[in-house]
Image (cartoon, rainbow, N blue to C red; front, side, top):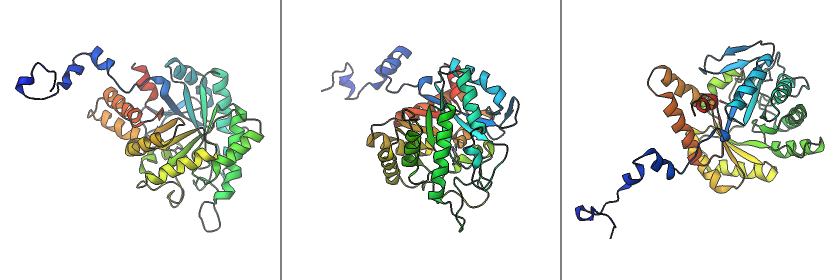
Length: 330
Ligand code: PBG
């Protein structure tokens, strides 16, 4: 029997009892969203002074080195603990040497950010696609495919150069096999045993990276990334990728994109005990912001609901372009 005064009208539960006031709703809220879980991506462009808008991502800018000091301070003032860095180099070549140049654009940016605010965590994205003339994530083999084993030492050199510049976390996003192990060994032998690796473990070959490729000028010049990024249809395989990366030494793992893969986030969360990150990618950002620009969605509510859904799915950490605007509203 239900203990309810309306029992005589039928056996139903009064779920609305716990929804009557903001205090009551807050008391029983299961999922918390605070700026402490958020990572804000930054695009840094060589040769640029100030900032220039990214047309495909309304509200986001490419930054020059000189804009980073103010940016670091405003991000930290909002309570956002970390940034993820992407670079646009002055020139590109077939082996992506700009990625591991000691005075490369991201290496310089890390030093600026750490000078401006040593407490702000700087995450270095390790990949070659922004630095290769062909736009793929590693050097090419004779048959035009991406040469996995030739990419590994270049990725390792990139990781070490970023750690040397002051990166707090190294985040490989290239999807080459064996990269986590290679990076761990390289970081350790260069004296960076304390630098954690956040691997883009389950990274899908997604249409939702489109605006990013404009922002970072990293679209492949031929072909696509289906030979190294994951098939969107595969969730069991995502779990397998994650377990491999943890066995190779990943301290944290990522699922990317987030919204079309909430089920994968949940399955990964249930399969492992390391922190799980989710990347709310450029296409997810831009489609929401396009609807906002048309007056079809309320930005504040739509963003809060989106980020909450990613946390509810099991993500500890959310990488999102909404971070600053969302945090500023709290
Ligand atoms: C580099 C990289 C990409 C993104 C993050 N790191 C692009 C890609 O794989 O093509 C996408 C991020 C986004 O869309 O916001 N490999």
